[in-house]
Amino acid sequence: MFGCREKDLSPHFVARFAELERGEIDSYSLWEDLGLTVQREGLGQAQPAEKLDHLWSQLLENSLQVNHSMIALCRTLGSRLPIGALSNTIKEHALYLQSQGVYNGFNPCVLSFEVGMRKPEISIYLRAAELINTAPQNCLFIDDLQENITGAKAAKMQTHLFTTQAALERELRTIGIL
Image (cartoon, rainbow, N blue to C red; front, side, top):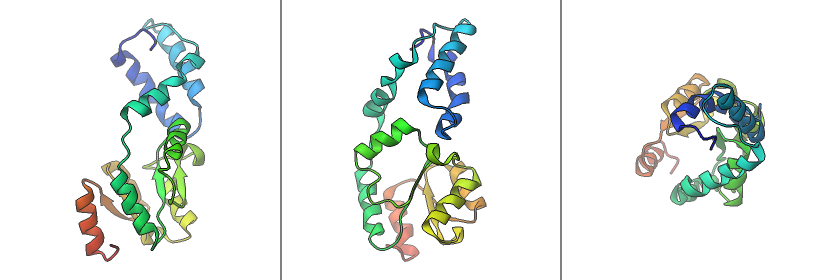
């Protein structure tokens, strides 16, 4: 992308990605800053940021796989109790998921770039509970990353570390939700 090796670009990208997920910078600024950084450090050549805008859509279309059976489970549960989405995401990712109907039926959708917080920061879990109008301890937070589970526990939420849909469904039956 900048004429440099991925391993040389990656640390600079990772260092700025949390800012992008919090909405502190936009993708245009990210690409511009990365280009200047790789050029300054002699790793590659800066590119006009507008030429790189298409990268998100290409990446999402090529790599994102929506788990439709999990979405169906959430919609089934949503007919009986509030189901929210809490996601570390960027604007382009969220727009793509919205265009695919992924967020339909989730209320609230707490998206990191919109609220200026990201998992595992305790504040984002508290914001989600507030938007559902309940105490955090009344929420069951499900995620596939342990660090996000740890953040939810610190916010006093009940948690489930997602490994498979079958394991989740067993737990939901055990606690009387399914």
